[in-house]
Length: 278
Figure 1: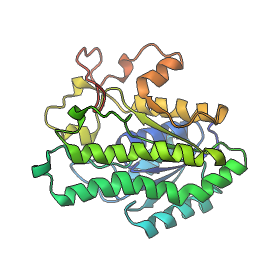
Figure 2 (figure 1 turned 60 degrees about the vertical axis):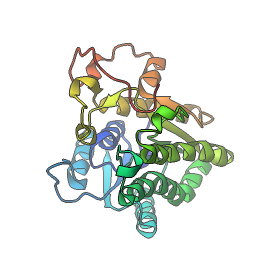
Figure 3 (figure 1 turned 120 degrees about the horizontal axis):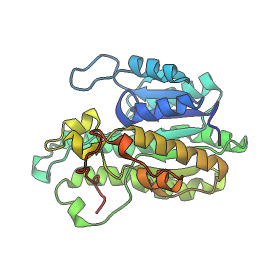
Figure 4 (figure 1 turned 30 degrees about the vertical axis):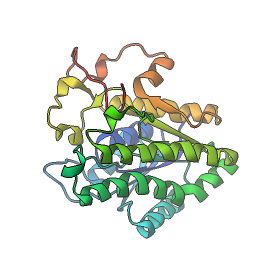
């Protein structure tokens, strides 16, 4: 189904997977409101709101860049309402913003703990909450709205808790929002799903993790293609809700069989599975 003239509010879309998804949707005619903190260039993390907006518009969509810390409840509500006013509504939220810190308990400063819970859990919940009136309006207009969280399937294997319990809890908090909101919002006609990469995705954030090499990963385009399929599918089947999708599985179900084009190093035979997937 066409995403033309649909409006999506995406958090943390100044770079990486969020930006890639935004550009993919823009190429299909969608309107994008992107909320992020970065307005000044950072040598360690390339990409700003301005450069992201330029890339989105170059891809074919309309973009409203909004500087916003999603941990700030009032600023977030203003940002969401501004996006709805600018585009005449909101048809979807993509909770992409996330913080990562892969350390055991005694090496995790509480400042890092609070950052992960503030962005991953609180930010996801608050963004969805702020957008809910607009998503309800979209549903009443028959536009089949969608919330898509970039979070993993819930896997209670202790192996995923032991090395970095704080990060695991923070990511699973996003996933629990999917479980709860899918059930809560279904009567309103709002779908809620999760998308997670089957393999590592070579973003600037991943490059900062020791031991991660490009030949181990795919590029963000596979997540963007999968997000597009999920959002289009929901337009055709609004009852498709409460699911935890993996990017490769989504694309295989859509008929795709070749995936080497997503490899950061084409032909690599050492691509690794992502976190939380046994």
